[in-house]
Amino acid sequence: MEINSHQQRKTILAVDDEPRLIEVVSLNLELEGFDVISASNGYEALQKLTERIPDLVILDGMMPEMDGFQTLKEIREISTVPVIMLTVLGEEVDKIRGLELGADDYMIKPFSPKELATRVKAILRRAEMPTLTPKTEIQVDDTLVIDFSRRKVIVRDEEVHLRPTEYRLLYHLVNNAGHVMTHESLLRRVWGPEYRDEDHYVWLYITYLRKKIEKDPKNPEYILGERGIGYRFKEFPT
Image (cartoon, rainbow, N blue to C red; front, side):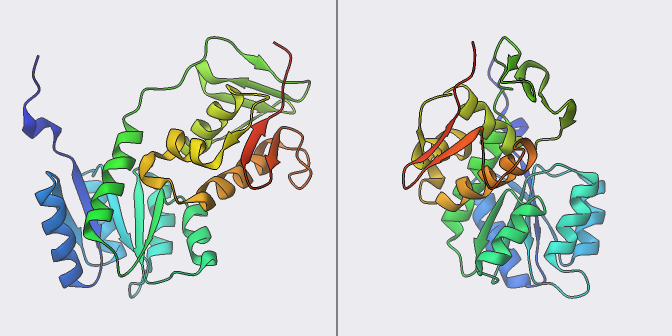
């Protein structure tokens, strides 16, 4: 049965204290088939988030009163909605801070409206992907058990929480255990082809995973790096 096109429209919440930027973002996303609602500051964004749950948030990093990072922290207290941070703060430390707080992507101003729309579509596409569920529980060793069918990872008898991107990354590594997966392959499978040049995303999320599952993240036993190529998950008993 054909789905009415109106039912497919996604709602984007754009948050920025610059009216001109909101206008540009809204115009371009509406031309791409999205509905756009806006907020001029963090407090208003949190209110809009509860009034009309958006499918994705575009969030400015530099705003008066409550900046984008604090707003993102507040969002993550109440919602898992995908968030793209859009900011003039282009230092690596700022990007890492945004991603660690739970941003799904981080773009630097000035930006290409077309690139923004492309990334919005990529993130929404990932959010709609079916759950990845191998058929069996995997006993890697005495301290690590992975059960993708129940979305559980047990480390030293304690369940650890994985964010959706961490989960997808671990899924692909584990299901190719013993084989090196290149940065390009991981970016394509976990983030999408639009992220082919974003190698730092792989490095950053590998770091997150190691902190959660490795006994000593600086000397990993499970997720092993192949310098200049990519990563592989250790082979384990079948």
